[in-house]
Every structure is written in C-alpha cells, then in structure tokens.
Amino acid sequence: MIIIGCSKSRELAKSIAKKLKVKYSELLVNKFPDGEFHIRYMTDIKNEIIVLVQTLHEPNESTLELLFAAYTAKDLGAKKIIAVCPYLAYMRQDKRFNSGEAVSSKYMGQLFKIFDTLITIDPHLHRYKNLNEAYPIKCIKLSANLLIEDFIAKNYNNPIIIGPDDESYQWASSIANKIHASAAVMHKNRFTSNKVRVHLNEEIDMNKKDVIIIDDIISTGHTIFEAIKTIKKDKPKSINIIAIHGVFADKKIYDDIKDNTKSIVTTNTIQNKHSDINVADLIANALK
Figure 1 (cartoon, rainbow, N blue to C red):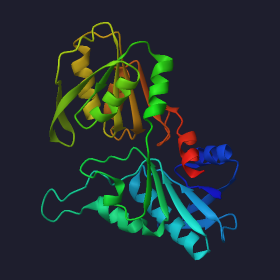
Figure 2: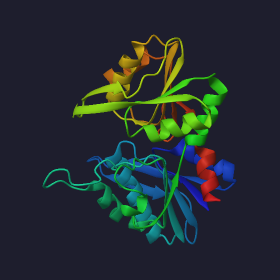
Figure 3: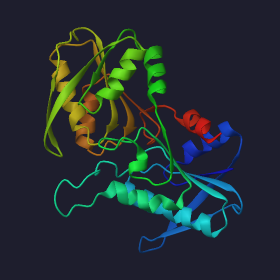
C-alpha cells in the first residue's frame, strides 16, 4: 500500500501513512499558464494498492485533481485505487428541487466509478439512507462522533449540547447521550442561502452553563451564528462550537462567530487553524 498525499490533504496523508507504517509519496501538482492541471506520480505505483487522500474542500479543483490522479493510476497499472475523501463535496443536491436542476451528488457517484473504494467521514446524508444510493462502488462511511465525545469529556464538565437545526440533532443527541449531558435542538427556517432564523424547540436552562453547539458542517456559518444569538439571551457561562467539517465560506460570519464564542473546534477533515481533533487514526484503522 502506498499513501498518496494530494494537494489538499498532504499533512493528513503523511499522518495516516505513519500510523500504518507504509510508504508515503506526494502527488506532484502544478498548473500550466492557462490554469490546467499537470499531475505526476513521484514513485512507481504499478501493481500497488494506491490510497489517494484528498479532502474535497474547494470542490471543483480538488475533485478534478483527484479524478486525474485516479485515471493516471489506472493507466500506470495500479492494482487497486482507494479514494480517501475526509470531506465529501456535492452531497447537498440529492434531488431535483426545481425543473432543470442537476442532481450533482449522483453524478459525482458516476465519476467515482474509477475507484475501487471510497472512504469518507460523516458525509451529509439527508435524503439518502446510505452512500450507495449515489456512489455505485464500495463505500466506507466513518464517523467522528467518538473523537468528539472524547474531546468533550476531556475538556468540559457537564456541558449542554445544542444542535443548531433538525439535521444536526442526530449528532448532538447521540453525543449528548454518550457523555450523559443535556441536549436540545433548534428549529431552522431558511429564507435564502444566507438568511436563516432559528429557535429552540424546547425549554432548557443554559444560564451560567457551558454550552456546546455541535454540527456536522460549518459552511457559511449563518445557522451557527443565529444559534449563538439565541443562546446568548440565556446568559450562559460560555458558548463553544464543535464541527466535523469546517468550511468557513463566509469570512464576515466566521469573524462574528469567533467574536461571540469561547472556542471553535473542528476535525482536520478540512485542515484549518481550529483543527484540534485528528481523524488520522480513524482513517488508518479503516485501511488496515
């Protein structure tokens, strides 16, 4: 097995290779003057099991790079090609909401037929019950829940767990149950992609308590920030954010969140300065 670090996940790929005690090599990625990719393997991959590690943050470029790498590996005689995409993009469009729309999640599944296996962490499954409804290859869906539970247990005493919308409650309630904490969910009304309103579905006393908002993904952050504004009215001791995937697409909202919370913590499925939870062990165990 050779772990190949693509351009978006090199540090994570190195960590996975180290934990597995297998060879690591980087994918050489450059661009021609017009922006086209130039991709090259720096080691012989013929008859090898190739693991391409690439988060699909900044999805258009990262996906195309990954696919070019996979087709190149096939041409060069790799025995097996595994995609490790800690963050899997293009999952939100899981149905045709309006006439003429692309169901992009299913088209991604067709593009990924070049791979023997896909490994990902907590993909945004909303209407799909499992990944194979979109991806017609072997899929391994990992969860960062245990890592988050351990992080909370080591850093907080009797916190209150909040899911900022109905979709996030599956993570929030599961984690709260495991660490014996109180939990509540907020209901979200979305008006546009950048305008939402949230309110608590039940009464819960957050006064002078450590509150942790848990979500699978912080995309723009508008939902999280609306949750923060609601929670602040109850005068908690602290407000903290824990998310699996930290996209942080809206810098102004990110700054607002940072200014109104004690801490922001994410995993390193998308590497950022808040990536205090390492998923390398999780992925390495799945590759054994």
